[in-house]
Amino acid sequence: MQLETFLLYLFVSFFYVTSPGPAILLAIRNGLTGKMSVVATSSFANIVGLFILSVVSMLGLGALLMTSSLVFTVFKAIGAIYLVYLGIKIFRSSRIGNSKVEESEKPNKHYHHYFGESLLLAITNPKAIVFFASFFPQFLDTNTPIAPQFFIMTLSFMALSFGSLMFYGGAAKLMKQTLAKLAFIRWFNRVTGTLFVGLGIKLALTQR
Image (tube, rainbow, N blue to C red; front, side):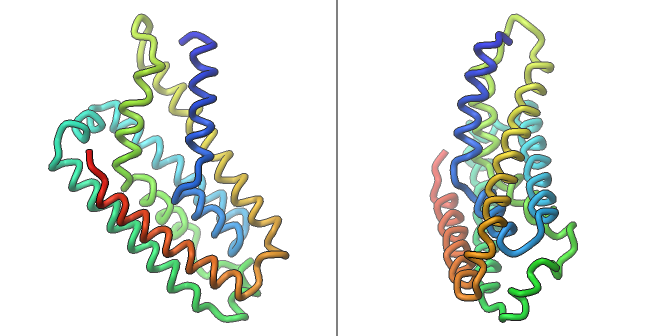
């Protein structure tokens, strides 16, 4: 891959990974309500999910999703249901009391919970698989081995995504003293939960 092509790829990827979406909303929420180690765990799980999606798209699932309405509908339904479920769970967490807000630095969930939550959020998104399947080929040089280019692009995308999520989570963490009042946390969880439900409904209505 030529250097100018790779730089263009990084430029486009940067704007994709920094655009607001479910993963960024989750990073902000974790930054406001937990430690940076929680943000890091969730962010790492997200890029693991991205790697899985990238690999399966390379293996042909992306092309299958773009050509088979049944397969796309099944993946879409799974992703939509999980987004709605996560939205309802976040919305319900707006009922937390003062003591739990004050003790938010001590998450009452194990790290594997945050890892699983973010991993599922990533891998249940069929649009991401389609994105990888349609986005990557535009930057591949077919005159040279494909696999090395694929892994370089995937790892670069993962690094950008991890950095973006850590930035949003870290920014929320720095603003915690100003924003993390009980009323704000409640309203943030309500708005975030509603957005997740909305994203789930939007995904359910998405056409191939």
